[in-house]
Length: 250
Image 1 (tube, rainbow, N blue to C red):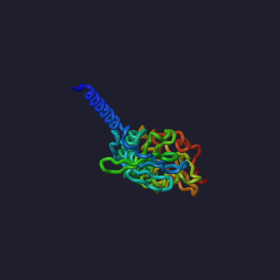
Image 2 (image 1 turned 135 degrees about the horizontal axis):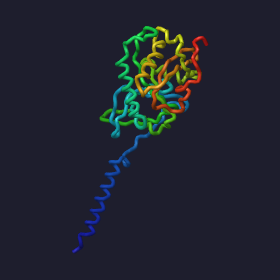
Image 3 (image 1 turned 45 degrees about the vertical axis):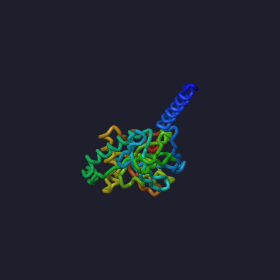
Image 4 (image 1 turned 90 degrees about the vertical axis):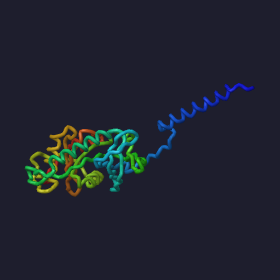
């Protein structure tokens, strides 16, 4: 009568293989990988605009929002995954808190009410994106770890101008400038005049926010903006530390 040992050995080997395969699948190595697409222009600016919601993705809590591409296209249901995810969540929560504290109060310089501000995270160049389904919902997932940190920076401006802000960055001839403290822009009785003082106010009340400037378009339209302490990539140095000063008479 044949010994049962060879059969046991085969069964044991099969079990070991099954266990190994299960471990590899659980770790994601055997799962079908979503293909990464690069959206936007290699020479353009794309922007992620968080909306305050978060999504649990691959065990991480990631911010959700919109992705505004350099051609003006806006994608909804977007997740920022990877580097700076928690920073974006913290920055956004800080902006929301400051909005709750100050919006509706009066600017002491121009007499207008403060407005709702919104943080924006700009990527220089194309954005790596894949599609994923979480709890039955399909999302665009920005794979931020595939982006050079030097090419990511955070800004904030009037909530109603987020699309205008990224569009302005992509207009040839737009430049960044600093605003002197005695500029007559502070006296303008409109949102443009309100933003510079409000940005200074927000910077004074948060370590997450630092500095600001103006986008000056070729037609002389200006968009005041603030800057987040992080991310603050070196590719955005001219926006973070403008070398020019805005002169309203120029």
